[in-house]
Image (cartoon, rainbow, N blue to C red; front, side, top):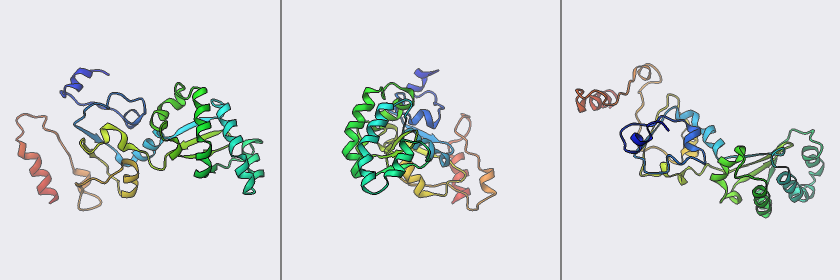
Length: 232
């Protein structure tokens, strides 16, 4: 990272993206951080979840795929879905995605982990990043089986396990369209304590400009005056 020394000493800020921040191999932001500004927070949901999802194509993990198929076949046959199961995983002519119930998944997950390890899940680029997030909690995830691979994902991304998402780090979320609070909680694990938002749906939001104290001659109370008088 350019100017890494200056960033580590707090002299400058670091501009990055959600993919870099939340990927499992990220080591730059696991040390002490005072604060983070999340821009366009309304688009973060699918990006964050993607970083916590293992995509395991059959072409990359053939042994793992065949192992899981063999382990869960009996269950699907027992609920009279054997023909559908074969169409998906054997004949490959059905685009359906099969959900593996949790009680079945927990019976086979140890075999899946063993197979994944043998097939290089920790070193393949398609899996190594998400694996860092999920490797100790695969039994708590949900698994899906399709004609071309396996997908493993947690119910909710455990972002609270990341150091920079702890309560001690100041976080500011910027968004012009964030209306879905449940979706925000599912993505970031909490609701902000304070909000700054326009009184109307249009107009004020188009003219709101937030400026840091880049000018040493700018009095400290100016910014507070603009925000407080305009929104209170």
